[in-house]
Image 1: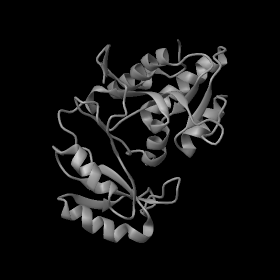
Image 2: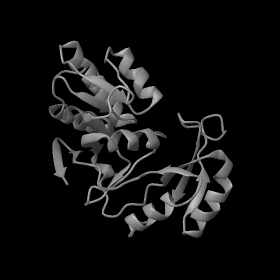
Image 3: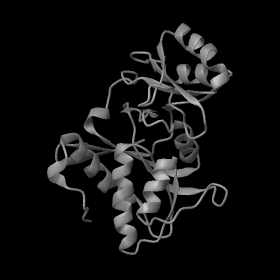
Length: 235
């Protein structure tokens, strides 16, 4: 399955991301509704999926962000919505970290809310990543927490009390990053998170938290590109 991506222009990490994305195409079948993830690795998948649609693959996509939807539309991928279809056969998405239990930190691209909603409606969540995303314990990557603006300062104080360094994510203009749902994101540096479920529960219980970036028990398959090999891990 050829891609028009110029390999000479890609670094090692990008080559691995493209390789993992290409390997994920095996999980997409004709006639399916497919969740389209957000982020650099998911973008490779969307571009490769666009190639397959041009060759005749019949699918409909549900994007997890405005920018993924725009990319898919530009490539001729037919799109649908959760209003029209509440069951998704397979979603291909990236991750910022993956632990041995296939628990994830996601949200580096700012789309964690829609990503988690789409993942929850998906029969098979396939995560694609380069080898740097595989970690023994989650937490080196800052944990994104989406919050309503009204509660931002209060939630930041409560998360700080849990032991994290908390900062408001900003965009290129230096202003707070605004999600597709018009919320802000707190990037929370916990360091290692030994009790992933406990932290997830505490965050979910905080009034003002819209969603957090811990994805637990959702990934079906993770495809890591490691050198020239694809390592497949299943839950």
